[in-house]
Image (tube, rainbow, N blue to C red):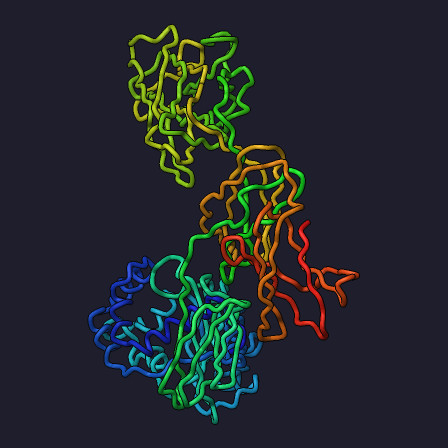
Length: 615
C-alpha cells in the first residue's frame, strides 16, 4: 500500500466511509459544524437535503486500498499544481503551453497497468474534512449548488475502482495572470482512482486512537509499527506512519492478529471474502498511563521505572517532584524568588519601608489597568485542615480595583477566588495598617493546586498612583497543613524502555509520565509515591521465571522482584555458568504487572546461560 501520509490516510478513511455507508455519509456532511464547510455550502447555495438524498441513492461498494505507484502519480500532480498555482487535470509547459501530462500518462509513467482510471483534484482545500466534502457534495455552479454531473462524487462511489493514490500538500502559492493574482492552498490534493487486471482481494484498514473522540480517524491518530498477520492468507504487514495497513486475503475465513512487539492487541475474524477488498479498523482504547516500579528508591544508585506501554508512542516524558513540608513565613525579604511575576513593565513589586514585619512587603499597583499577578512557582497540596494566612493592607483604590487570592487545580487554567477585597471607591478611605487574613484550603484537600495573588481592574476608573498609599500591600504569607511540590528531575525515556530515577536526598517524591504520540504530549499519569531511602538495591531477591520462544527469532525471559529495592536491570549471557558474562545485545526490558518484568531479546544460535544483574 506504500507509505501514505496521515492526511492522505484521512482522505481515504472518509472516501471509504462514503462507499460503505452512503446514506449515513450525506447526513454526516449535512450536519457538520465545520465553519469551512458551512461557508462553502452558503457560497454555492447547496441544497443539503437534495445532496443527502442523492448520496443515499448510491449502492454500498467495496472500499478502496492504497497502491504505491498511484500515490506517486497523485503526489507528482499535486506538486505540479502547487508550483504553478493552478487547479487543472492536464499539465502544461509554462513556455509553450503544450500538454505535458494527462491523468492517463501520469499513471502509465509510474508503471501502473491500469484498465480503468479516474482523477479528482482540489487546490483550495483547508483540511481532509473540507476537501472530502468538496468532492462528496461536489459543490459548484450547478443545479442545487452541485456540479452536474457530480463527477467527483461518482468517482468516490464507482465500484470499478479498487485502488487509489492520494497526494496531499499543505502549502500555498500565488501566480499573477493578466494582472490578477490567483492563489492556491492552504491544502492541495490529487486522487488517482484505478483498477488493473489480476488485482487481488485484500483486507485494509487503520489502527488508531480516537484522541479527539469524534468517532473517526484523523491525521495524527494512526499507530505505526503494529504487526498485522493474516495466517490463512499467508500475508502480513506493518502499519505505516499513517496507521494504515493492507494484507492479502484468503477466500476462507481470515483471522487477523494485531501485535505491538510481543504484545497481542486484538484478534478479529472476517468471513465471506471473495474478490473484494474488506475493511477492518482497530481503534485502540486510551488507557490511563501509569508509572510502574518500586515504592522505595535508593539515594546511592539509580532505580529503574517504567511507564505504561502505549502502542505507537515514540517516547515518554517523565518528571519527579519532591514533597516538602509546610514552609516558614514568606515575608518578601528575599524578593520574588518564590513567584512567577506578571506586573506592568518596570514595576518592582517589592516595597521597602511599608512591611507588616521586617523591611519589605509585596506591593501591587495599577500603573496600567492590566492584571498584576504574583503566582507561586511551586504547586501546593493542602490537607483537610490546610490554611493560607497572610497580612493585608489595601490602600487608596476605586471600587473597580479588586485584591484577590485565586486557586487553580493542576492542569487547569480556571482560577477561582478564595479571597476578595474590593477597593474603597473614589473619595473613600484606605487601610493604614495591616489586618490578618485566613483562607481555608480544605475544599482542595489532597489535590495539587496553584495559588496566585492578583490585583485586578474590573472596569471603569482606577488609581494609577504608585506611592505606598495606593494599591495592595500583602506580607507574612504562611501555609499550614500543606505540602509544597518542588520540581526535581525530568527527562525522556524510549518507547520500549524505562527511566532511571536517583533521588538527590531522602524524603518523599512522586513520579509521573506522559506518552509522546505523533509529536503530541498526552495526559500525565497519576503520581506514583516513592520514598527515597539509604539502602542500596544490591541484595534484592530476583526470581527468574519462564523462558518463552516468540516468533521472528526472539525469546522472552520473565522475572519477579521478590524483595529489596529495584534497580537498573541488565540481562547477561555466557556459554558456561563460570562466565565470562556479557550484556545481551538487543535486549529490551518491559514491565508486565506488579513486580514482574520481561526481557525480550534475539534468540541464541546455540545453548547458552542467562542471568539478570541489577546495577
